[in-house]
Length: 256
Length: 229
Image 1 (cartoon, rainbow over the protein chains, first blue to last red):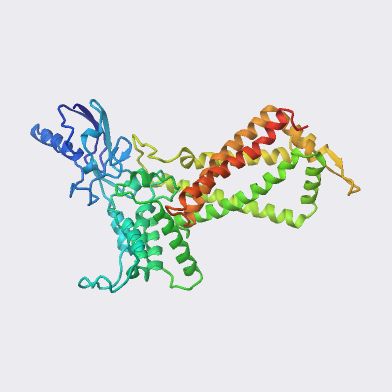
Image 2 (cartoon, helix red, strand yellow):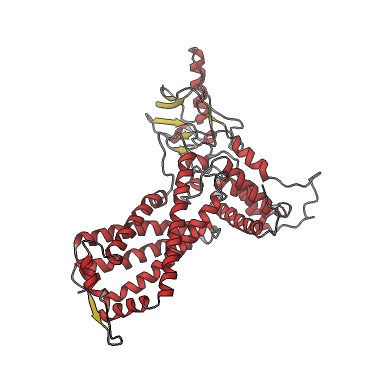
């Protein structure tokens, strides 16, 4: 198949960026989107030109490294898939494909299609953990967890932190990501203990990074490669106002 | 952001939701009161007199409404500001990706609604020109010795002009979309959404949108068509 790629090229944050078009002939439909970009880069390198920078790691849809806004949708047209699991057969022969980096103040551009998503790491560092030494794996039934709770926590734990939710949100809000972490940790006995502290710290860290608020458009859920449900946003909001009320009333120590 | 205000983005949304809920509660009562226009004139005139005759209640409600409105609008301004700052470089292509039109247009429908409310107050509360004639409309109730404002006549004369009626319908169009998504959002903001409750919550939000839209719009339509005189 033949496709026309319209890629965002920008050599550094300081330089002016712009779209560059590449016509690709004889693209095999069973190539993944990233393999197609690999082939483009090989050709660019052979011609002595600068290859296109894009992020990738596991290429099996579990690491959250790949990003890309493809034709106005993060991770492209697939449902519940990351860019690395997107195949060229998802596009029509002769299609013009626009590829942009994720755009948000919290995700500053590094080069071409690569953005810095360490804002997510800083949010996790603020409270996305449990403060107990876990040691060796304990006997599985020492701490009983109802199956439905374990399932719910696991659904939230699917989040790979790719940032697609932020990328598509009209407000660049990160609440689906933060909600997934708060939901996952807060449901389980080990994480429940620190939930108030965690929620206050994570929401404040999120605001410091400059993400917007939630308008509940549900676009995040629609593009999430791991199908995280917007119910985690409710989990976050509920946990936040409870913790905030306790803090306000002086029932817990104020959180920075 | 927390540097400039002590309110978090989640806190701002909760304030939006709570004040929005109060405003929705008010318009529910307002709509029920308005429906008395379909009864003989004495009903709505008596009702209006009743409301005006308890100044403490009237002014409590008015001040609460004004406070809710101010908080709602100032949170909206702050949130719009945060939104603009959050994405300095726009996308070349950005699909809605499942986001409904009303959910992406709350600011637009909100501004429309705010302008409508100003017009509505100008029209029916302040009676400023060219609506000054409404001040002279009086009626007699058999329970009172003094004459009372003829609200029935004011509504009929005030909405008979098709342009005014059209402005009201436009305002109600804004209300329809704003409520449809607003109620949906309140459930999420207050943390009441889960996969099982979401369908009925959305159904309720959409149903209430239609109830308010049709319930309010029926009045100018009936008056323009001459069904209410």
